[in-house]
Image (cartoon, rainbow, N blue to C red):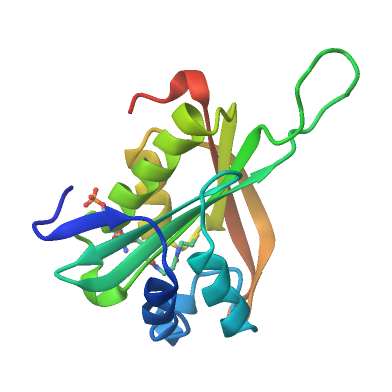
Amino acid sequence: MTTSGLRLTSPTGELAEQFLTWRHRPDVTRWFLQQRIEDAEEYVAEWAAYDGRDHHRVVAVLDGAMVGQAALGVVDGMGQSGNGAELTGREGRLSYFVHLDHAGRGIATALARDALANAFARLGLRRVQAGCFADNVASWRVMEKLGMRREQHGVKDSFHAELGWIDGYTYALLAEEWKG
Ligand SMILES: CC(C)(COP(=O)(O)OP(=O)(O)OC[C@H]1O[C@@H](n2cnc3c(N)ncnc32)[C@H](O)[C@@H]1OP(=O)(O)O)[C@@H](O)C(=O)NCCC(=O)NCCS
């Protein structure tokens, strides 16, 4: 809780509908990789059915309005299987959105902190990773504030609809590095 009146809560269909009213604003999508949600009905149904068993999603509500969300998808780890290493479903992929009218108030940091805490304590993941355009300073500042490590600087490895091929960063954190 970093901003007075901010509440973090679980997704519902109604919150998904509120999210979709601003999700496709050009200032919001400018630095996001997935440009559009094509099937709104399916998306709302997914939030309505959320039980958090195999992934995590958290929503920020400020004075009654839906102002942000973070999602943590679960994927398999990379490596050689069959040697006792548990690769299946042990890694997380983090993403977040904040309504830009409320940017710079610590909302994304609060959402991402909640997602990382759930990744390690509840879902038992061993590593969480996230990527962003290098020019998306607010996004990688959030990750650095939470102790995530910049592991890759890809030179012109990320395609941006207006800017063409530009640099990208990958950040990650291991369970044993998470300080809460
Ligand atoms: C990126 C985003 C989630 C940040 O949300 P937010 O709630 O404003 O983030 P926070 O307030 O928690 O933290 C942002 C930090 O970046 C800093 N920051 C923002 N813009 C900056 C800039 N241009 N230069 C330097 N620092 C900047 C803020 O000062 C703050 O750091 P501080 O607490 O040390 O001062 C939000 O801008 C957003 O949703 N953008 C659109 C979608 C998106 O890009 N998602 C991430 C995709 S990888």
